[in-house]
Image 1 (cartoon, rainbow, N blue to C red):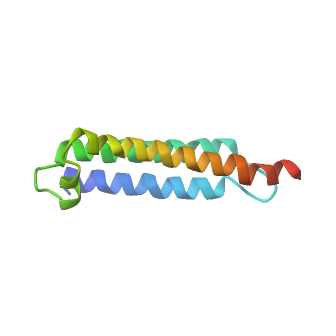
Image 2: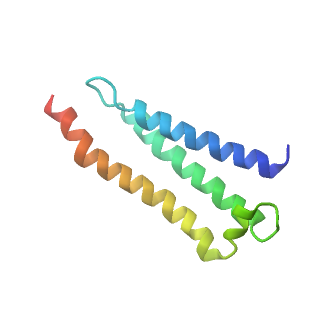
Length: 104
């Protein structure tokens, strides 16, 4: 396996972990803060891995997808999107999900 494939697999694993942790943070009648925190951390780690991949492989012809992120601004958008998704998810949980748990 090449380093590119290993990094891509790691990013995919962290993203899947993020989704699983996010959905399992909210059980019947309880809210697991640690899982919820780890769901955010795994998303940020996934974003960091993708940022590193684009820094290493953009413009080198390794992947057409990586070549799209050929400028620092485009690479920076990966970090912005990762934190933006985290902020949106946190807002949805705070405004829509948590009131249901507090009402019980």
